[in-house]
Image (cartoon, rainbow, N blue to C red; front, side):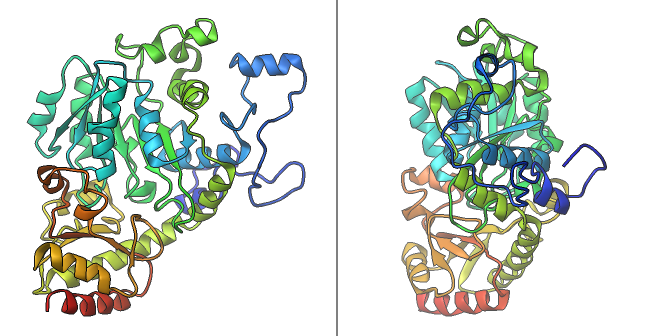
Length: 430
């Protein structure tokens, strides 16, 4: 697509970044399954390696299929650029990598996917980084947790597993005052339901494995650059503001302006960390994104109906879906996610741990898998799976206690989903 009118979301999710293949006229983006790309001549090669010209060198860095996906996600999120990588977890490291150094910390929400809590509380320590976990509903606690060594705040727009909605505007105001970026994981919401950059996010990360692809076929991740952060305002981010020895003293912020973070992510991050997205995965995600808005509308419609039914069932203690008027996050839906509260929530089952296990084992339509965002409805008992590495206190803080199951509502017939839950609950709580 060329610069022109302001296209709607439904048009952009199909066309953004894509052009007919110049060699064949192929309308669907081809899978460029090539390791390397031929240079025009020696000067062209040198210009590419010196970051003086944009182009394709080697698929660890850049690939035409992946490039289309990067442009499409960046367009839908309202960013200036994006870097795709091998998984959502890779995207989180890619987002932090230019910002952090030994002794520095990130202030993170307690309401995060269990794997992210483990990555932040355990694994990043091997880089000399630290994470401070805070309840992001307590704005004073967030402010108090930020110190001179803090380099970012991190949260999820719609938190996994509970479907809690973060007040992004309030958190971004705190981050702005501290002159640090806000990183928002938008996996559970997608840019169709929430556009974090419009609420002050500097960077947006995705597990493209989930709703963006939508069919449970491939893993992938993405970091979207808002292009709005001034990396030279202070000396906190030398990777972006100071001379880069590997490129003869080039300064990313000075040379690339709003695209500084994006170019650093490719030229340094992918070059040295190597967490590359393969072109076939990009192709599957591109195809999935063509129906993103249609799927998300159905996810929301079904989730609303199923959650409302579950909330009135006497075998259920509570439901955390933010789209329910009883939710403490209900008022944030219109502000943060105006098209709906998503398709993800948790349910507390009377009978505790054992009842949850029986429920999972007796469902027929719901699939028991460690994934979310599929067209199929999915369920998992987080305390014994995705969040089992966490302490009991961390599980409760994340909304994944032993009496709770996480439900990812698909796009099937909602009445069939309710009937399946009804029969499984009968067996689980008998």
